[in-house]
Length: 376
Ligand code: TTP
Ligand code: MN
Ligand code: MN
Ligand code: MN
Image (cartoon, rainbow, N blue to C red):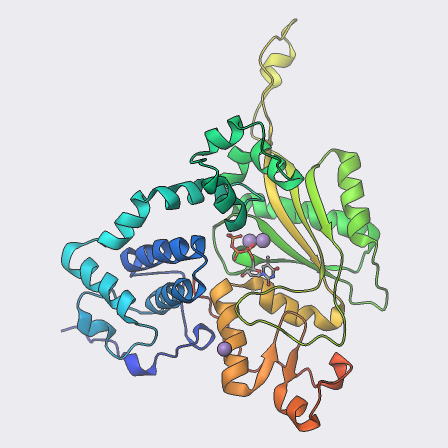
């Protein structure tokens, strides 16, 4: 008989940063249902319930076996009543009626469509839904709506942006970003982060961290890069956010990963070399409809000072849940504070009985808990 691998549920940490998780998820039918539930709660701005389902999904993703009986989840962390109900139903009926209800829910369906547009979040969706709008067609037909520049780009390149970015496209864009950055700063470090750094084969966008190890810092770098792309006709959209980093500031909330780096949310035009037009070149008058030989791709560029680069890399590598749990672990288990800029020793803050005037009066320690094995 084959040996049953040793697995002790009570040894599974409640923090995803302390669990070993591969991309191979053998509990997809449960985690898919949890993610639908979580998304619905996100649309309702119920953060507590949303996180409850996201945490549960993350726990089931680390199990080396598929759950088939309620006994299998005994002793596991993050298995609240709501979560157990969904699991029980899936074990018995093969599907969750609650998740199914969500998928059929009018509000959920509308929010799902609305938020699929770049630049449209829960707030805008709420507004449109209250106005009686239900589908993207209705939104597009409503000429009284004032769309932001970001949302206009979102509609304009909608089809390209909802289709996944492949690893090959990520590599192609990576070359473009590296070449452009290096024309201005030859020693700059350009690193792909986000889902692709976690080994995912597809993504919604491509994330890059840029830093310059030398003494030179260049606040203009990002502007120079996008200006060049503009000239080359490669830039379809761009929104530069200037750095808001202030040294006195200590990390705020641990659930989301807001940071203060200079960054740019862009849409790049990636030419697709696969289309072969050569046979038409010879024909005298070619009244063929123009073939679209490019794809719009969402790209995030983040500029970090070199001394904060490690923390930025950790935060931007994700996943979101991994980051949340790293910050939660730092707070509750180490009495420290972690954000995308540094790791702070809270005990030292308390000891000093005041918030230090300068962030760097605190010891930015090395990140201690890094068995980085991602959870999605
Ligand atoms: P995303 O690009 O939003 O997510 P992803 O790359 O994990 O997945 P996808 O394929 O859908 O793009 O963000 C990448 C990581 O960066 C994410 O785990 C959270 C983190 N992050 C920050 O730290 N600060 C930020 O301001 C944002 C937007 C993301
Ligand atoms: Mn990403
Ligand atoms: Mn991103
Ligand atoms: Mn907390």
